[in-house]
Image (cartoon, rainbow, N blue to C red):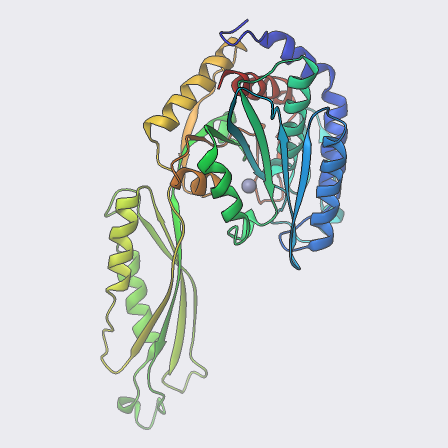
Length: 386
Ligand SMILES: [Zn+2]
């Protein structure tokens, strides 16, 4: 028994006894493809999860449609809890894998690993979240707080519509547990960089490259210099990184380029760093005064900082994992999630609580099956202790 009166070993054994059914559900969810913006796929995934949720007593199911895009799913449980400030379980149902991926890389189990597009990020965890609520209900464990499970359908493309929902619930929530993929070795994520996305356009002057090159002002040369300047920020200020990932310009080799465009990805660890780098970016002036620069874009996700609140939540999870004889490590990563939005409105956030595995967004994406029982028990006991 831990301090919230939950027998964790019993919970783990329960998840172990249900593991086959859980894996069947994960398999079914992976085989319904749901790349971001695929309305039919999103609807089918949500309907499978909603049907499952309806088999759990006391769970309220709400579907939030997003026009021509998909559906968010919001489940509420334990609404009779003493403290109405909920524990928010956060995740997403969309994947980065295009339709047809499941034909190229079908679901398969090899030893202790289950492979399939989107299994690790994060369909297995959508199922696990439901199973955690089922387990709490089954054992008559009444958490002190109500539980909201929010699964958005647009996380992988920046959460244009999911963001407001995440923020609204996170503002009310006492804690936010993000069931995104864990770090290597199943580690929780106690920090995530913030992201900014910018587009830099250069407008120069075309001229014949052989006859009168001096009359031209090269947009390609200008942006090449700007790219050097931007990349020079790397390694200078803490966790700031800058990448010009796309570079396009010019028309023909014998024409001085009149136009060029660069797409820029910026990452930062703290709010202070984000201000610093944004100021620097907006200070850009052209090297060649005849070339005009146009910068658009801005911060997409604020950073999830490793604050005291985050560390406290992590320590709590780590202690529970200890009772299950596993060491829950922590890591800080460059990639952002909806956990970043939750943290930015002041919520206590612990991210990367999903089932161990590897290969998010890649062809070898998989989960570790052995991790399911202890992971389920950990999350259930954590909810009960909050
Ligand atoms: Zn994800």
